Image (cartoon, rainbow, N blue to C red; front, top):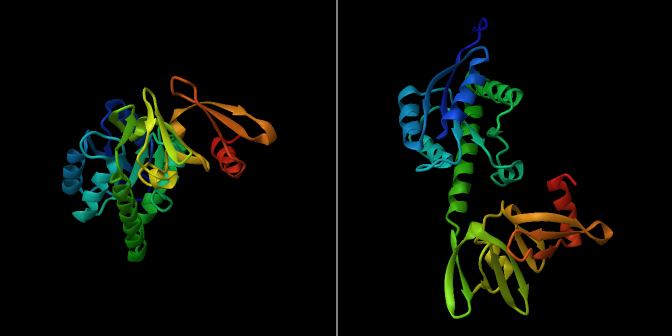
Length: 266
């Protein structure tokens, strides 16, 4: 049912999971003046449909095989498709803050209906505005995000770890923590402990995802996705017990404790 004097917002839903698409379409169909014009199950299909249909809005999943949501957004910008983009992601809010997504909207899975409504109304205002400067600024913001992510994805996905007389390549996401002692960096993964050729933790950190890897202490870097337990310590500080086989314990420095509490709402 469409309201009087309100344009119908045409939406393309993109997600590689059928259930996720169904849920989004169900929620969109409950809203007035919104029409789901098509669904896409992968990035290439999304680009093709967006070019053909020119929807007002593309609801775009980030993590998809083939082309990621960010790569799709890049292609839409390059091809000057006039659609607005709202990212849909299972990333937590801290990770999204790393993308500096403050002027382009995003939704966290599972999608909250009132939050979806706010995103829709925000896009509706952009679509109906007569101010070309607003549209240009929205496109610039989207371009800045995809450029940031492209740079982020250029970081090394695999790192060399020396263990004994062997040099192993490990996936960056498998690193649990890294520690500096006596000018040697020790890297711990789920299955391997060894040393790194990097000379400083700053140098190592520059090749890792800043959304996942935190410098919790001047001598320690941790993968926040590999924290098993947070143990309260003296003076409201914390010890992090990690998910490696040994349950490695990493102290959080006093300087980082406030940031850590804010992130975890402690």
